[in-house]
Length: 83
Image 1 (cartoon, helix red, strand yellow):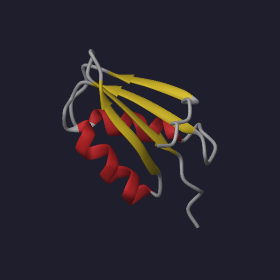
Image 2 (cartoon, helix red, strand yellow):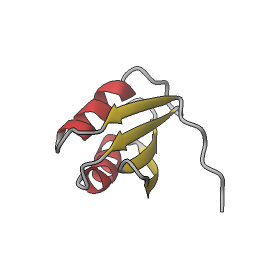
Image 3 (cartoon, rainbow, N blue to C red):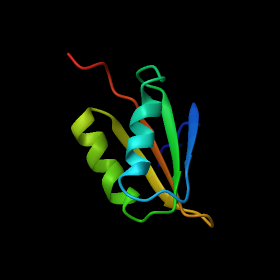
Image 4 (tube, rainbow, N blue to C red):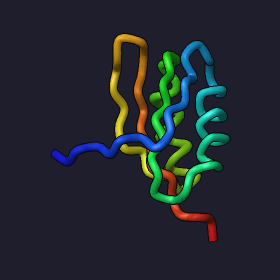
């Protein structure tokens, strides 16, 4: 099992409901360079479904999702620029 990279940026979306966690992640990804890792903290269960779909459509890599005491901790890696 490979070790997950540390996040370059953590986004707190606790208390936000769908689609706001994904929209917050999308906006914050704009400031990251390709290959950097974003951690999204969310307590909306839909974020665990929506974020992997967003990554697949937008060309990012969904790395992991885990439950924590506060909610969800979701990691994704920014993909290359769109051609």
